[in-house]
Image 1 (cartoon, rainbow, N blue to C red):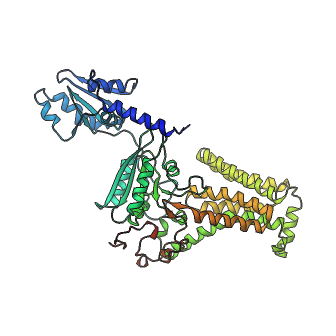
Image 2 (cartoon, helix red, strand yellow):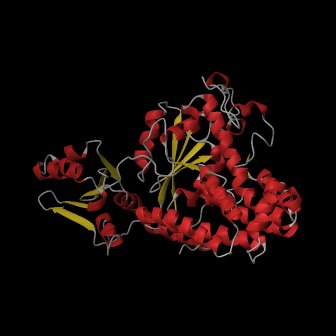
Image 3 (cartoon, rainbow, N blue to C red):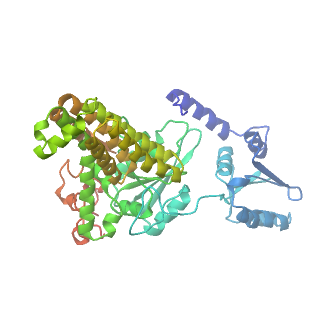
Length: 492
């Protein structure tokens, strides 16, 4: 469990820790201080060269073993005591004198070299990491297929290869009082808004928590309104999407150990865009995007509309369907709101079970479970066959939303709308939609309007909003991320 610490206690711990690392002991050498600091670390490796009076300290699983052998061990095995000073003058060996810097270097995978009173760090960091593979949560039909992995440096390299400009700046910020996870803040100077860069940097530096493990966790710590149902930062796992965001003036946050990359600021409509929209013909991309917005309306309101109509507004049902619906519901002993909640919860159970079980078993549970339970529920008279169809369509529509985090928020909001529909009918649906619109309009992402370009109204940004206009028409960057400088054209 992650526990927040009182601000005064954290400040005091920081002061004691800095004092401990910054004030060298009058009795112990730096080598002895490092050994004491890493006492109890059985995975620590110590190598002693008695002829050279040199000691090495490193973590074997954090270094690249081939580089460590060729760059450090081989030279030290073959160098003489007279040649040692010349060897250590190479730029590969960085001299340090601070205990904290030595400890941080060792924990980052560097090797500490102790030559009497002098200390050097050699960067041979490596270790095992996952190979670059296509993203499983952000699949691509057209365009590049490679996805980010858990290595921050690898992710940075994939972005650098796509955005080859010296204006791409990277700020490294540690996050977590215990884990000290590295977060990298990226932006293109002259395109990104400097005020947003400063604000995001300040928010990350203010985080007071023991550990941060994933980008989704970090995004919740820096959101404008963390208690909202809806995420205020979108995450991507494909380098091409991140490169496009940087060129548009967005700010990117990479967290070491997470394949998800945060894009800021983000709008509500960004969660309905995919890379395929831009690689297909513009008419196809526009039609697909409109389909997603239609799926959003269906998944959040379709079941609620069924509850409202069957509870209060039978006059809205066509006569040809009214008889079929009445026969279907004649054997159901429950009120429509209970019936809807029961089936929606069943769908959520199947969805969660399919996600947590092994792939082959999960697919079987989702398909067989849905068919068997739905058919058995209708035959037993627990629910109507019409509701089974309505719930199934709503569930399928929720999968059309590209972002899993946004899809989960929409599904949760659907239950509130069903409750209002069961209590107040169509009036309840309208009240729920009104509350939803007001809430979304009040949200911001790093101070930028969450519903931009719809509210506030930016007509120029509609070329890449509901529509995916031809590239010749898309010449300006999004207003919410645009810098205050004169560089406002994409072809600057």
